Image (cartoon, rainbow, N blue to C red; front, side, top):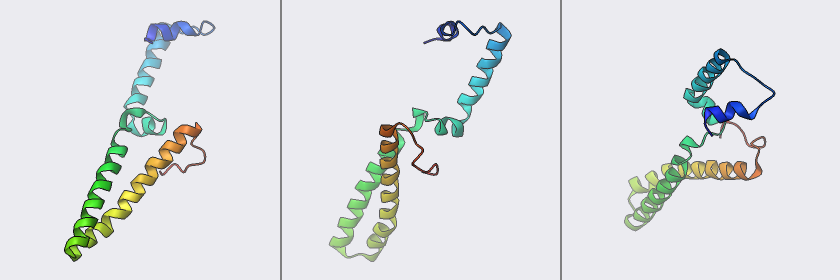
Length: 112
């Protein structure tokens, strides 16, 4: 839907050209605010969390297998540091999926 159709949808509200221009400026400013867009649920950055969880899971499994096979303490410590990060990101992904299905994010904390 373009801007012309958006203005014609609400017949009871008529805006002057100056008001329309000012409203477009405000909307443009809000679209540029990344934190506001994230809080409003903009889907722009939704691609990276699943990719991060997948890559962290693969890396964790690889480091765990290699650490057990070689008994190298460095690899075991690397797994010990990598695994909690993987679990936390997977938990965030799960919370996002639950929030999207329930339709409201009131039950899930905003810091996730």
